[in-house]
Length: 561
Ligand code: G16
Image 1 (cartoon, rainbow, N blue to C red):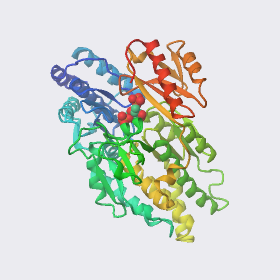
Image 2: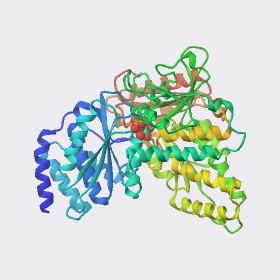
Image 3: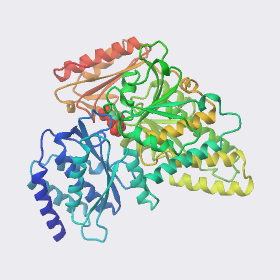
Image 4: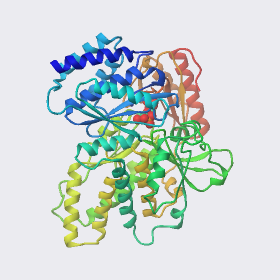
């Protein structure tokens, strides 16, 4: 079409400025990530993709510039679909091919072919709209500019710059805008704070114990999450939060943040012996992950980690409790054949003890490969789907059907038994659905839900942590010549290629009591990850080191760390 040709011309011109530099890129676990200086062309091209996605879906799309937990010199780009979730996996091959097109001619050809194949309407009244945001990385500003140019190279498409946001805030805004709801940053903060308030107001008399009024210390990873928490906490009268590592004097993700705390199991910078006994939490670089911890008293910098699995368990317990209050009161005719389906989604990284605990609660547990895009998709199959990676990335999804039923039940109970336990349980579930981000895992909304539930239960972090005892585990990463040489199956628990390595891993694992071990190529770093679990910490360390050596042997040179 004429428009495509004219937009193609602007692509041609711009691409000369944004030419491809460096390595082959892949959309990976969560978008393209690399050293920031080679990303201009990639981000420009993803801008084009986002505009086309907006035209295809006739909806608002999001584009986020972030490399989340990676080091500050890296950056990345990912796309949020109309639902606020991750870009549909069906478009990932197109993303890969345009990101790696060697020259403007090839790029143009790929775009034209794709527009035709997908029947993307270029001439309708909807011209495409993309919300753009970035985290606090210094390279973000110029990459955002490249994204803007990419979007506007599709004639008529508009790029709306939302500025510095957490990744989940942008996803939330995309979802809200497409649902015709209020979608500003202030609306986000107001929704979180009012639903939190609602949960706190319905706490049963006498259950809130003294500890909860104690301070919560939050490590902001020297990133955007700390900044935003400072704003949010002004709206929260029931929480005493002290934010550290909010970016003023430290480097993003360096010795701080949820990834560091969870992997190394040590205190982040600016936490130490005076904090023993205090409830602490850590956000990652773009605030889509959250872990809790306490500082151990032996003064060696080690922590008791309360990870994504424990958060998931806490949420599952609370939701189950509310459902059983609601179901107890249920009229024989209501929802008789339609029992609420609650499902939990985990990955191979989930601690074995957490899976046992959840199964004992009678909850259905399923596994997917790493990457919230997989977990989210699976969780959406349930009435209430709770998903978490051990690294603290996750959320709780409520189906439209369930919410519709719940709202009906609330109005019915308001006219019959107003103020009853059943009505409160229903209202709590509704508040949870408004508090916890329905688009993607969100450290800020997750933190408020944890705090509300702890207050509701009257639990200390120790009590929460004692729900079950984690099996000792260790995670390592190994540099190899080509990480794509590792191909896995069965939710990443089995290596199919290179041949022979799985047998070697099995033989090693069999030497350890309660041993479990798997390897997988990272989708965000150029490494192979090794995870090992066993009945003692020494055994977990030893199993992970032996398997890391196997990875070295099978996949080339390099020393693991
Ligand atoms: C991203 C993904 C997560 C994943 C993590 C690590 O998190 O969203 O689902 O667990 O990367 O992935 P990998 O082990 O493949 O490197 P984030 O917080 O970095 O966006």
